[in-house]
Amino acid sequence: MVKLGISPVQNRQIERIKREQDSENTFEVIAKEWLALKSWEPVTKVRRLDMLERVVFPSIGKLPVRQITSAHVLNILTKTVKRGAPTVAAEAKRTMSAVFGLAVATLRADTDPVWAVLKSLPPNKTQQKRALLIEEVGKLLVDFDSHGGNFQTLYAFRLMWLTLTRPNEAVQAQWPEFDLERKVWTIPKERMKARREHVFISLPGKRCHAVV
Image 1 (cartoon, one colour):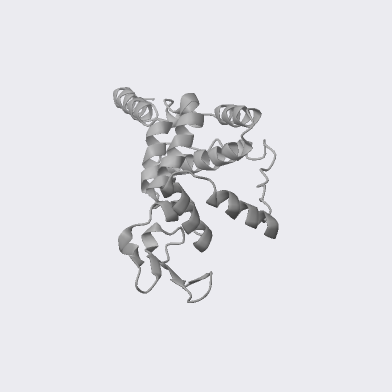
Image 2 (cartoon, rainbow, N blue to C red):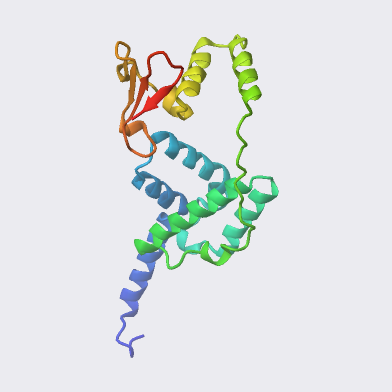
C-alpha cells in the first residue's frame, strides 16, 4: 500500500467509516426514505409500508443494503408466491427494485440485486372481474336495500354506485365538497388518483350523473 502511495492508517480509517455507514444504511432505512419521497396519497403509502413490513422487512429489513444479494430477493419472492400471493410478490419485486435504485443513486449500494432475478417468477396476470349482467345489477340493488347494516356503510355504497367513484373517494368525502342547492359534488384534485378535480352534477329528471 505504501508503494502505491496509500497510507495504511488513513486506509483503515476510511474502511472503518465505510463499515459504519453501511451498518446504518439498512434496507428498512432506505425503504422508508424512498417511501417518504413519493407524492402518493397517505393511504397508498400506508398500504405499501404494510406490505414491506409483512413481506420484505422480516427477511432483509435490518441488513445493510450493500450486503443484500439476489439470493435474498429470490427467497422473499419465492416464499410469497408459494403462499398463494403472486400479486403481492410482484408488488414486492417492484418496490425492492425501486429502493435499491435509490440506494445506488445515492452511492449506498453498487447494484440492484433484483435485476438478476426479474425473470425468475412467472408473469403475474391480473384477473379482470367481469361486468355484472342487468339482472345481477337488479339483485345487487335489492340486496343492498334490504341489507340492514350500518347506515353510513349503506349510504357510502349508494354514493359509490351513483357516481362510480373509488371507495376511498366516497368514504373520505367532506361536507364542504357538496353544493346541495346546485346538486353538485366537487372532489378536489388532492383526493383524486389522477390529481384532477372531478365534478359530479345531478341531471334533473334522470337517475344519472355527469362528470366534468
